[in-house]
Each structure stands twice: as structure tokens, then as C-alpha cells.
Image 1 (tube, rainbow, N blue to C red):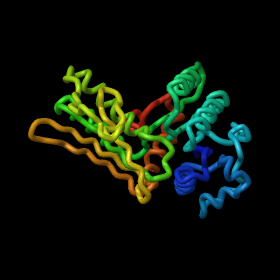
Image 2 (cartoon, rainbow, N blue to C red; image 1 turned 30 degrees about the vertical axis):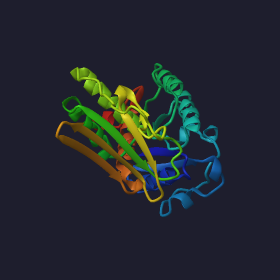
Image 3 (cartoon, rainbow, N blue to C red; image 1 turned 180 degrees about the vertical axis):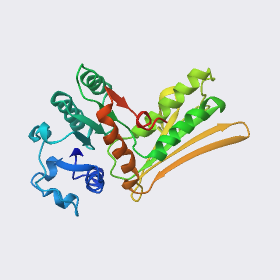
Image 4 (spheres, rainbow, N blue to C red; image 1 turned 30 degrees about the horizontal axis):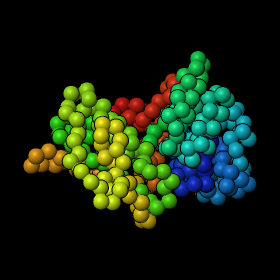
Length: 269
């Protein structure tokens, strides 16, 4: 039985993780952390389970001996601190928090790469269909002339563009570079409205972020070439779509090492 603690437990994703862990026969919800819900009964976040106790206000209040894996869905600064604490405490971690700085990621890579340190799985997206969409985009990238990415999320998402879109652009750019594909050219001479062409990510790939109520998490990867186009679209209509990937990472991380970036490393995709 793998004992799981959830950081950011009262958020939309954190609460969904709590319920998923309670519903898994081989996992136990051992603790929950969320500064905005400290003192709340854990059972209120995951009804139907047998978990007792209350939500803690910080990871420092956790007893490392009482859990095996920390699952983090929080904010970038809080996630970096929580994951660093896990590395020091000798506890494995799984995180879906995006927006961490390159410096924070380098620090985590060092901490989890130290001799005897546990592993950490860090993924921009835990939806298996999203992982497949990015892999399909990598395959298509060298064969078409240009690509743009449109990511669409709920109105409350804090960062833009999404970590998934940034990762998609990076992987496409690397696939094109490996194949020696020509640079992507943008014929726009003048933006009548500044920013209308979106952000420019790796490889000169334009990324457009949409934020609307009613959405959850969606991405379109649109390739173009003379006389043809290819659109790869992935949709997550509910946060439960991320749970199979999260639970797969929780089950896999005890046998991994270092900082593992991307769910594809867990799934072998």
C-alpha cells in the first residue's frame, strides 16, 4: 500500500487527486496540505473514504515517516518549496504544477539527483491523451512547413501560456532540429494590435492562449504546408481525465531516480 500526501489538496486538482487516491485499492490518502484550508477535515475533500485527520497548513508539518509519495498541484513558488522539502526529507514526489522558473527546475534537478535522493516526476500535463498529442506532433513536425499552437483553459488559470503548450513547442522544435527542417517563417510585417500573433516559443513557434469560463484544458496543434494542413486537438472536459496519469506516476515514482520530466517517461511513450 502506497501512502500518499497531497499538497494543494483543497484546489480543484488537489481535491480531485484526493478522491482518486481514496478510490484506488492500492493507495492510501495519508495526509493533505493546503494553507487556505488548514484545519478542514480531510474527509470533506474526499467523501466516502476512511481518511481521518485535518488538512495541514504547510509541508513542514508533515511527518515523513507517515507517507511515501507527495502529490503536488499548487502554485509555482509553493511547489518548488514543497518539492525541495521532499528531496531533503527523502520522500518521492509527483507534481503537475507549471510556471516554475528555470532556476527552480535546475535546483530540483540537483536535489533529486543527489546520491540516495528519491525521485520526482514533474509533468506539465497528466492527461494520457495530451501526452499522445504531443508525441504525434513530434512525428509530424519534420514533415510540414509551419505550426502554431492554440491552448485553451478555464478563466481561473494563473499562467499563460500553459506549461503544456510550452512543452509542446519545445518538443516540436527539437524534432524539427533533429531532422534538419527549415526554420519556420512568419510573413507578418505589422501587428495592428500588438500581441495578436501570440507569443513566440522555441523554434519560432507561435503560441496563443485563450482563457474562458466553461473550459477546462484544451490544445490545438495546427500544422500547415502548401495545399494542406493537419490539426491535432486534445480536450480534457473534466479534471478526472488527469487522474489515470497521476496515479500511474504515483505508482511508478518509487522505482525511478532523479527528476523525471514528462509523463511520457512513465508511460514509455
